[in-house]
Image 1 (cartoon, rainbow, N blue to C red):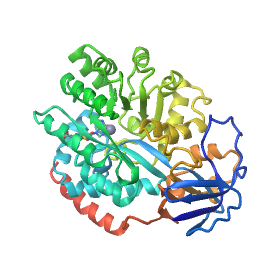
Image 2: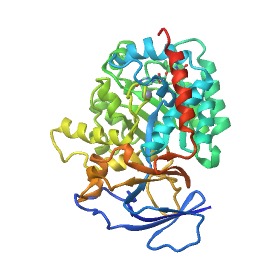
Image 3: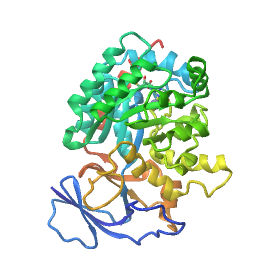
Length: 437
Ligand SMILES: N[C@@H](CCSC[C@H]1O[C@@H](n2cnc3c(=O)[nH]cnc32)[C@H](O)[C@@H]1O)C(=O)O
Ligand SMILES: [Zn+2]
């Protein structure tokens, strides 16, 4: 199967961040040839025989956004319990609701998130949740790229069952669906994982060469809890358990990390998923991402589940990430447009360990591409394309979403998801789940 995208402005997001006015609209105008799952040519007036032509005049092509931290089925719980403290929200609302979710609910909730992600330009995501078989099946049906982990909370005595499920997920799905699915191990957080199971997971991850996805230092309460229990910061706790010795680690949040903590993270494989909207909404604080990046720590962008962030539009996260750093430093030159766009693409790709496949538009990479319709009042005139993308574009401006060479949305119509059926399914399921909570 060959697809030709014609007459688009191509923003490949390769290389270093560009200086202000480094890119101008129209400078890289051309065509993209996709063969199978791969970008075959980027050039001018490509004339190959193809099966499908996408006319892209007036549109911009860029790498799909990569959401580095998600709990996709929580879309069923969006708006159900807002404006609560994180620990109350989790203990009193989310965990009881999650206990009621059937595998089918998880399947439909994951699909709901995927519909929203495709419609706002996200092509890949990292997910940590329960009933991962159902999520993996939804991923295959929908055609997105995903890195999946069974979230493990060790507060009850059936923790062993969770580890077994985590390993079954790896066994069954790692590298499957044409290489679009990868897997990680997902110990939930320092406050839900005591040293013993945590160390066991770290050892298994090293032996099996599996990345680890874990929450870190999201709230001040977490810092107090870990200090009271272990007399350490959450980062020190994970460091001492040996987490950063060998494994590739995806840390979600990392809001409350001090200078010393950042020193411990320096040199780690992987890095931090910054989830600014969730952190803002829960009043958690501002993660010191500029400082971490200055120390060479990888930083990508995620949304967290829509149970907390409520929105999973990565363009909102991009804006929030840039604005928060500028505000925090009192300096608008911090985290410029070109840098924050790279965090949400190749930055996240590195965290998911899929940067050899995606994250930039380059010949030989997998075709995960989004087309943005620039013919709109809020996107004209164009002086600096990266500024518009970072500060003006919304998810709803995405016209076409392609993953692994396959068109998942065109003219804003989903190709692999029956939207009407989806909305019917989720409304009845969501009502049943939260009844009486
Ligand atoms: N509760 C599961 C495993 C956890 S999966 C991932 C978990 O992360 C939770 N979660 C979602 N958002 C956040 C957040 O912002 N901070 C901490 N936990 C979260 C979510 O509710 C879900 O329970 C078990 O049976 O072991
Ligand atoms: Zn989370």
